[in-house]
Amino acid sequence: MSKIDLDNIPERTGSIYPGRHAGEMKGRSSLRIGAAGGLTQFGANLIILQPGAKSSLRHWHVNEDEFVMVTEGVVQLVTDEGETEMGAGDCAAFPANVPNGHCFINRSGSEARFLVVGTSAPEETAFYADIDMKYTRKNGQNSFTRKDGSPLPDDI
Image (cartoon, rainbow, N blue to C red; front, side, top):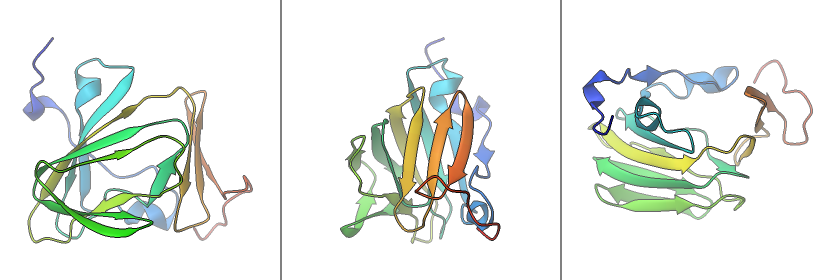
């Protein structure tokens, strides 16, 4: 299969974040385009943000590169340096193991979309810049802990 029909890819909502952080992803959905095309070495996802929604908690990856291109609307890229407005055609890159947390927020009144292409490393660790949380994927299992590896509190 070469051409991928976006209309036939199920829109995914929700989050794997623990506790109250899962609710922070309200208004965010995605289409897993690369998986729909059978790709396994890297991911390609179309992220859809409704007005007021954000893409993720601000994070950075240890093993995976990420590339983003805005395809529709306007978003704010939030990094350690502050906020940068990005519109259709604007791109950003996040090399692996550079500890500069990032996320995107749609502060406009219209839907925004961006394409994310990234490495699919067999094992991954990500850190969250604004909270004491670490993500680990090992042997196909996802886990969240404090940055030092200790358990998260129940009220997270």
